Amino acid sequence: QSPIRKRLLEAFTNANGEFLSGQALADILGCSRTAVWKHIEELRKEGFELEAVRKKGYRIISTMDRVTENEIRLGLKTSKLGSMIQYLDTIDSTQKVAHQLAQEGCPEGTIVVAEEQTNGRGRLTRHWHSPKFTGIWMSIVLRPKLPPFKAPQFTLITAVAVVQAIEQLCDLQPEIKWPNDILIKGKKVTGILTELQADSDKIHSIIIGIGINVNQTREDFPEELHSVATSIAIENGGKLSRSILIQQILANLEKYYQIYLEKGFAPLKLLWESYAISIGKDIIARTVNEVIAGKAIGISDEGVLKIQDKNGVIHDIYSADIEV
Ligand code: BT5
Image (cartoon, rainbow, N blue to C red; front, side):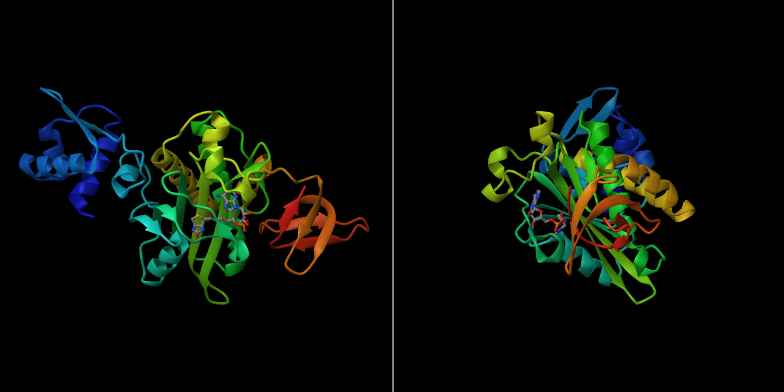
């Protein structure tokens, strides 16, 4: 994307809905007013609405309800996350694209977002239903200098960032089900998939996939998901702008990533526990190899779930499906 376009959207973001004069924009962008006008015209063609008021200047708003790069940029207040945004109308999986970009050396904080996924993935080759224009199907590339065993913590940190973003924008109280589900009233609204490119001792890239059901109606879900899945719109009684939700998630995640890099996982573990359901309850954990029943006594500093069985033996669970 052109750097001027990027800065133009940044200038409107920093103006917080106030008008900016043509001259002020030209000064901020370091180009002529004619050049400013050319970029504004292009945004208008893309579907943005431009308000021009004599003596005051310009203001742009998005009414398109898409998650294009420009729509995400207008209102994006992060410095690292979203520094590069790859927007796709339709794709098999944003994870696949993000893996490829990571391999090619994309900047940290690159995000890939699509209106629709034709082959969205869950864990263990499960399918993730990702219909067009309704949800957030997004992958984020991070490059923390850490050993691979720390990677599961990123699922937990991301879950906190998403739960808080939903709380900030809606009158809802989502809960986290270890390791990667966010539920509203017991139904899944978000799934997180954290994948790695790493050596045995060093992470190269973490690719965090986030799938959020935002504006689906009940009819938009296939039969088999009716009893287990929900959307924000269903629970909140109205639609929510996906690009605004993305902006809030990225802002939260950037903040928590910074805290994590400075102070480690401990402060985030406390936050995570405050949103977690199953902790302290009797649960059944189905791992790939076994089924363990017992009381979930908490997560370790690494993000590993601890279950105490009826004989008092404590099991460390790295990945599983949980039944409460
Ligand atoms: C997950 O897996 O929950 C991780 C989902 C990650 C999806 C994102 S979207 C962007 C990025 N690109 C991708 O290709 N993937 C990531 P898991 O815990 O394995 O849950 C999968 C199960 O959730 C499925 O087997 C279904 O039962 C259920 N499911 C599928 N689609 C759903 C949806 N839209 N909402 C709620 N549940 C769903």
